[in-house]
Length: 388
Image 1 (spheres, rainbow, N blue to C red):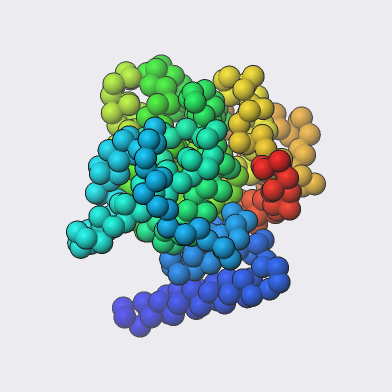
Image 2: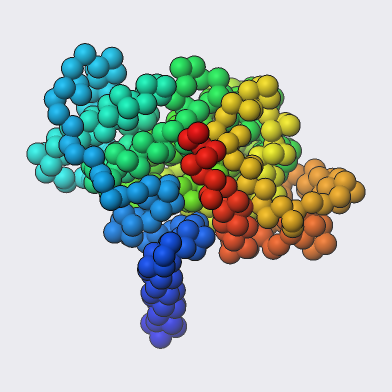
C-alpha cells in the first residue's frame, strides 16, 4: 500500500514545484506575465501560499506597491460617520482571526482593520460601507499586512466590490438575479422546485458580499476562493454560489417545498465542500453562459449598464471561439432540459455541440485558460475603463 501511495505524493510535490517555478518566472519578467499569474490563481491549488499571494495579488489588481501609505493618524476616526458601525462590526469579527492568536496581536490587527476601512471610505466618498465589507478587508489584512492591504482593498472596492458599496442595494440585487438563470440552465427541475418554494436569492447575499469570507470557517478555503475571484470577472462569485446550490441538489429536493425550509438549508453552507471541483464547475459555467447571455434573463435588466460587470467586455471568452449558431444553441438547451439532473460541467451533450458552445473542452485547464484569455481582453484597459 505504501509503495503505491508514494508516487502520488511525489507527483503532487512535482506539480507544486513546477507551479512555483511558473509563478516565479511570470513575476520575474518585465513586465510580469499577468496571463500566467491569472492561470496559476485559477488552476488547482491556487497560489499555494500567502507569501506568493503578497506578490501576485497586487499584479492581479494592477496595483503598484512601491509607495505604500503610512499608518493613518488618530484624526481619521474623528467625526467619521462610519466609525461607530465599523467599530461594532470589527469587534464582532473574532472568528475571522486564527484560533490561538495572542490577544494583543488580535487587538492590534482589529485596530488596523478599522483604519484600513475608514481610509478607503474617506478617500472614496462615493463608496458606502456595508456590513460584511470588513470580512473581505480582514482577509487581505491577514494575508498581506496592513499597508499593502490598504491599497489592494481600495482598488478592489472601486472595482469588484463597487456595486455592493452603492447607497442602495439595487445593483447588489441585480447581481443576485443572475443566480436563478444559471441554475435554470443547468438543472431546470431544481430551479422549478426553488421557484415553487419561493425561496428567492437572499440566502446567497452574505456569500456574495463577503466573497464567502463570512460563511467559511477554514481560512485556507477563503483565500483559495480569493485567488480565483481576483483572477476573474467580477461576477464569478455568483457563478460559484450557483454551483454550490447545484452541488446540493439532493438535499434541496428532499426539503419541504416551502420558503422557510429551503432557505434554512441553503443559508447554512457546508464546510466540507469539494472546493477545487466547484471552482472548476464555476469556470465551466462561466464559459458556457457568459454574463452577456445571462443579462437577458436576469431581472432588473434596466440597471445592467450601471453594474461593475458592464465595465468589462463581459469576459467574451475568446470571442473568436464562441459563436455557436442558433440551431446548435437550441439543441444544447434542449439537451439540458431533457436531462434534469445533469450538471453541465459533466456534459452529456455530444462532442460537436460541446465544442460549438464552448470552443474548447470543459476540463479545468481549458476553462481556466479561456477565462484567463478573456481576462486579458480587459486587463490592458483596466485603468481606462474602471477609473476614468
